[in-house]
Every structure is written in C-alpha cells, then in structure tokens.
Length: 406
Image 1 (tube, rainbow, N blue to C red):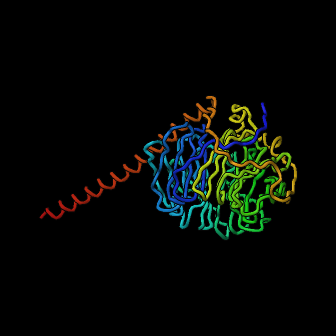
Image 2 (cartoon, rainbow, N blue to C red):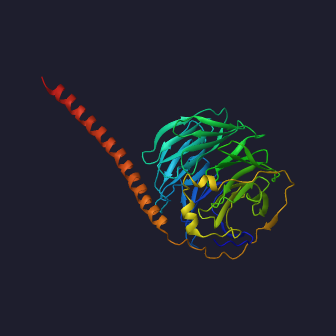
Image 3 (tube, rainbow, N blue to C red):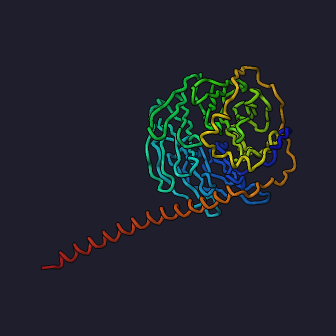
C-alpha cells in the first residue's frame, strides 16, 4: 500500500449554478460529480475535461441533497418542494418524482445494496423507501425538531439521524427502534455519517464542533473544536483515517483521525463552505459553497491502491473489530493549527482514471438492472393507467347498452 504525503491541490472549478451550492456527490467510478443548489437545478459534471455538464430541471424549489446509487446508474435528489426525484444521470435526464414528506426534504441516502434509500425532513421524520418501486416502507419519528441528515451504516443494518433537537439518533433498521440518542451537542446537529468500518459516527454541529462516537459502546471518542463558525458537512476518507469538514467560516479542514490532529486548512471558497464529499476511492474530494462554486480537489495526502479501496467499500462484519478503533481525542485548540493551503488556480490536469476492476464490472451489471427495474416500474405505472381507462370504457359501454335496451 503506497502512501505519499503531499498537499491537496485544487484540480477543477465547475461554474454553472446561479445560487448557493448545497450538496455534492461523486459516482462510484469518479466519472461524474453531481451538485444541487438553491437555484433548484441539479448539475451533473463530467470529470473528463471539455465534457459538457448536464443541467437537470424538475424540482420546483431549492435542492438540498443529492446521492448516487451504489452502482452510479441512478441519482436521488431531495428538495424544499417536499419531493424526492430519482434521475437516470444521462443526457436525457429522465426522472420520477414523488411526494416524500410534508415539509422540506433535507437528506437522501442509498443503502449499500441499492435496494432502499432513507430520507430526512423538516416534518421531523426519517423515512425508508424501496428504490425500484419507489414505495414507502416505514417512518422513524422520535425527533422533536427538523431532521437535517440520515444515513445508512455500511452494512445497511443501522440508520443514523441528526436533528435540530440537538440529538443524533441511532436506529436499528429491522426492529425500527431507536437504539441510542447522543445528546452532547450544544446546538443543532447539521450533518452525520458513518465511519467506513461502521463502528463509529461523526456529527457536525452549529456549535462549531465535530464529535466522533463509538456506536458499540456509545462513548464519545473524539471532539474537535477547530472551526470558528458552524460546521455544515463532513466526509470520511474511504481508508477511515481522515475526515474532511466544511464550515461557514469559509474553510475546509482535513483531520488525521489516527493521530487526532488537524492536517490542513483549505481556503478555497468565498463565504460559507456548505458541503464536502470524498470520491469513492478517496483520490479526490469536492466542495460547494454559497459562492455558487463547485471545486474538485486532488487529495494527494494519502494515495492508496484503488483495488484495495474497492475491496473495502463494503466491509464484512469482522472488519469492524480490527479497524475503526480510533484513539480518544479532545481537540479544543485554536483554529489554524496544521498546514494552511490557499487555493491556487492551477492548470487542471487530466484526472487519473480508476483501473477497471471486477467490482466495477459487477457494479455495472447491477446498474443495468437498476435501469431495467426503473423502466419496468414506469411501464407498470402506465399499464395500470391503461387498465383503468379500459375498465372505464367498458363501464361506459355497459351503461350505453343498458340505456339502449327498451
């Protein structure tokens, strides 16, 4: 496993949104990057230079969240218009919409098997849906204020949610019970996610902090108070060794979780940095901000073998005991420790393509199934409509016959 340590570098600038960028997500093969904005548009950018971006319109209000399905062949978005849309991220940009909640949808996240996804909303609920039938399965409703974020664990057994009621809740998907409430945040909890090993969670807060808890013992493992304003988003590096955060203080910070220290402070955005996400291999990360910019950075600080990451992307249960044991850290230190990197507009280089592994071939097959099932469900809907129309015609004819009979 080759490890090099260089400063992260700004690789690409994507301009096209007409209002604050709210969310970003990479596809599995890092060929596409999706971003949502307050401008109600969903953009799908191509990492290949000189490729035209797709602009998808359909939502009637600000887009708050976006997530690629594990295969990369479907894209889900949630909006202030209370709907979730499932898109096929190609040039046609076809989508199906459904009213998911009674208020703004804040978060959408696919399970690692792609069969279901979870949404969180200002209606104080977390809802789980079947992907292909776009059918509502069940609600989790113990939060007493807006729910900002909900994520599946890597093995799909747990769900974590973060809310303006200042709690982070851990749920068992099969029993639909709340397993634990973490109440140590001093303010609204803006974002939460699972460590790649599934053994701990990191939560970002309006109180400028990031907290990391062990989901087995429920102990607070790490506490970082490095930003000077609200932390709006975070993302784990696939290796599980690093965490990146985005804050309203306009910086991104990269934390070394194994050492429990700040590695880098990145000054790229003018105004609040709203969202950040690592690519599935960790080779790149993307950030978005109130400045309408989407930036793609090359990680450089930990380049690891892509094949290894692909193997680790769905950790077996046994992996949890060996990795994910993070050291305990309380880091209240003043902001600004660690290397500071100003964003320099450098010539974008051709991004390195991920070698085709067996995993991506399987992902592609799963993806084709995704699209087929999507088509089947659309056909089923149309058939139902046709059946209804036929029944109506028959009933009308019967009425006419009855009237005609003396």
